[in-house]
Structure formats: C-alpha cells, structure tokens
Length: 109
Image (cartoon, rainbow, N blue to C red; front, side, top):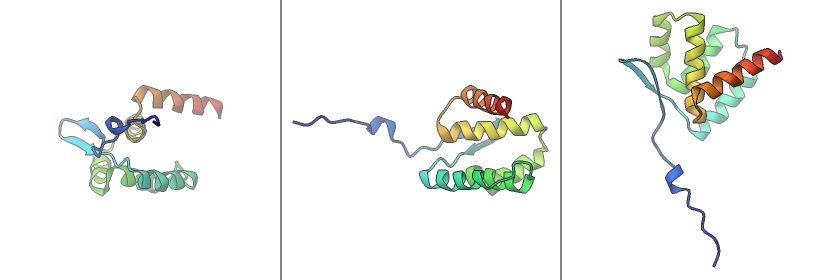
C-alpha cells in the first residue's frame, strides 16, 4: 500500500486580513494567480513611484482599501509597515520575518 500524505488541514479558502485600526481591516488577496501577477509587477516596478506602489497594494487589498489608506496619509514608516504587513499576510509569515528580510535586503544594497 502506498503512503498517503494528508495536507487537508493546510488548505483553506479563508483569506488573511490586515488590520490598520479597529475599523480598517482588509482581506488580503493571497491567491496563486494574484501572486503570479504580483511577482511580475514587482520585477517591473519602480518602488519610488507612488502610483506603481498603489497598484501593487490594489492587487493585494483592493481599490477601496488603497483609497482609504491614501486618505490616512500615513508616514513613510507607517506606509512601509502596511506594505510589509500585506506581504507577510500573502506569504503566511510573521511580520517580524518579513521586516528582517527587508532590513537584510536594504543592508545588502
């Protein structure tokens, strides 16, 4: 008899959420098709161009969320936290892991 590997507990249709405040909680689109689009956008994106960064956030969070985030007018540090939080949710990683990876990447440049 062959071995059976049960991954059913790891599969879920529930999307992660990103909480910015008590009344600002957004679903993060973590689907495979979204990740393929995101990977292409990240390769071709100038992260200093706010419109392009907004486009990436729109893929992950949706137009309404991006509009509300822009209305918040977050600081640069706050905006970085939002981006890292969204990336952590997409990759199903702890925020601290994503922040550490970002810091290591920045130091390598």
